[in-house]
Image (cartoon, rainbow, N blue to C red; front, side, top):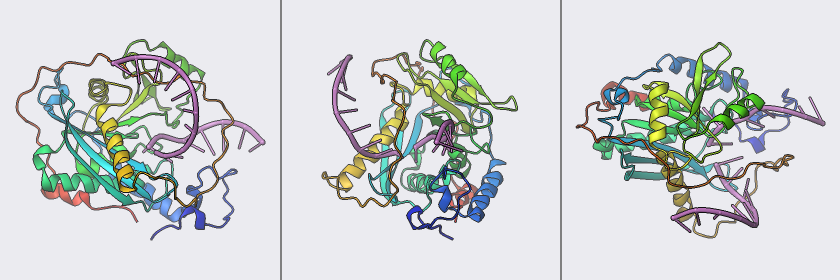
Length: 330
DNA sequence: GCGACAG
DNA sequence: ATCTTGTCGC
């Protein structure tokens, strides 16, 4: 049951005034409701508290490997992309494993359903790691996107976490404005008031529950990160770990994964980048000037860990868990 | 027409 | 996600 790509869809009287999501306009209501049901089904398996000993340790003793995943895209191409998985040692944050793979995306991007577009390929990378280098399986995975900070409380970090049974943390670069959360003047003021790296404030959903934390990931970072629980870790431990993984605004595991996937695309497509058929719609003009002065790279404090004893919490990607690696959408 | 829009 | 130019830091 594959959806037509956006450009093949004739005007179908989208009731979204301005066709909020061009991709969403190509998605059948049947598929969207199927995806919602799948999210609801898997959401029941999310564990939003610490399950591993190292997560409670002030120095994260026992944590040796932190993973990061990312998907980068080919310029004018709506289907070709590269998925990457990296594993870094902790606390050194040196790459001990890296795998990148060119993939063909099938599902379009629809806000709220990012996992159905990217997770299948990330799952495949985790499965490959389990087969070839099980000893390098990360003890926690940092995901580029949200966890429970999501339209239905089940973002990509939850999705990947449940299907791999690995602790996962959602790290988003922009606030997803759901459940009453708004990137308004008050929110911006709170951001401005964060002074040092490690400062944060809670993101309270409409029902009063904490959906995540806005975090100033290092001293000179202007824009915050939005951290939320994916699976098998508490929000407190998640925020603390993200801090310890940030040499710059973006945590190293995610940053390295991003670099690897881009580099892989550059090599796979050869250096001359241009010939790419423009099949998507024209870009919408940006009316507002970008008023933020950029990032600044710089050495920043990191949490220090006193090494760690041997591996305790071993990831169990065996047996019953492996069936979770089956792809779940269609 | 306007605003929102993880990646 | 991607494009864009310049600027700053190492």
